[in-house]
Image 1 (cartoon, rainbow, N blue to C red):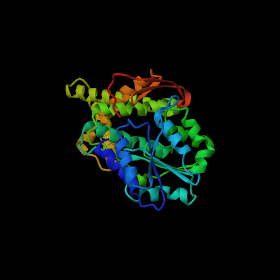
Image 2: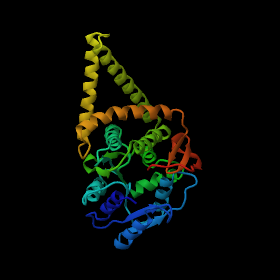
Image 3: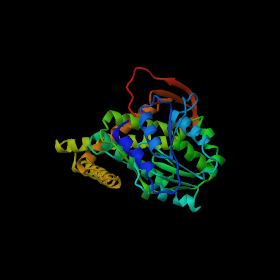
Image 4: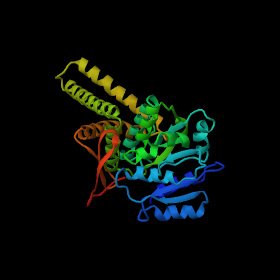
Amino acid sequence: MSHQTRQSLQTLLVQDYPNYKVTFILEDQSDPAFETVQEFCDKYNHAELFLSGKATDCGQKNFGLARAVSILNRDIEILVFCDSTNSADSGWLTRITYPVRIGKVDVCTTFRSFAPGSGRLGGICQALYATTVFGLITIVPKPWGGGTVIRKKTFDRLNVAQNWLKTVVDDLTLGNLLDKAGVKIHVSPENFLLSPLENQSIKGFLSFLDRQILFPKFTNPWIWFFTVMNSIFLSLSMGFSACGLALYASGNLGAEYAVAGTILWANILLIGSLLRIVNIPRLPIIRSFIGLPILVYLSTFLSIKSIFLDHIDWHGVRYYCGKGGRVVRIEKLRDRNFTT
């Protein structure tokens, strides 16, 4: 387990909240995080470790979540789901659960900002991508990474665990069940979580982005279609504009093409500026401007690639998916290097 992940996990154990329990979910004792998690459980009375075993019919993460919920005390009223890479300040749990505790809503969700401390372009691109997704979920509220709070009665009424045991994605599957049942989702941007990305490479970012594009292909096709079309449009616009500016500079095109190209690239720089400001912490300006075109073209490449895929590769496992993200077949991948 990395030092970053260890620190992130510890922030979830020192929340200023009177009565809560943290359940760490691992597949088995061979997990690299086992010793650290066991250490935390020995140190903190409100921490426990649950070994889920191996999934055979759904995503491993979904399997672990569904099985862990099934063993929780019946007196538990509120469930909070949070990825292990997210860090929270000590008051986060109190704030994020407040709308649910007072009965304002049954579900509250937030997102996360990535912190590429080293400034590597892979981390910059991932942070920029995350801010665009946040823009999407503020328009169409859905759990998507970050953390989600849900009333236990609502979770049980919608048979979330049973649906997780058939699918590969947890948050988008939950969001679809909530939408279908007409349950309001409260998005809480003031409770953003922070995910450190000290040494994210372009290769690591590609692995992350590939899954992010493929997940909605099976669970929310309209989101996937919008992503594909938007990426292609932006790539073509940027490419044609750059060519137009180059041809104008060489004297082969009129000034109107240079004006159009300049306006487009000025808008792209403006978007980059807004994205870097929205991200917490604020991203370095030059690397953001460099990272945005890279993000667009990588997203376009993976979007086009996703058209021809019927599976998702995740942590050394290939999940073949059908409608709604339902897993139809699982294969173990061998002799490959996998990036989380």
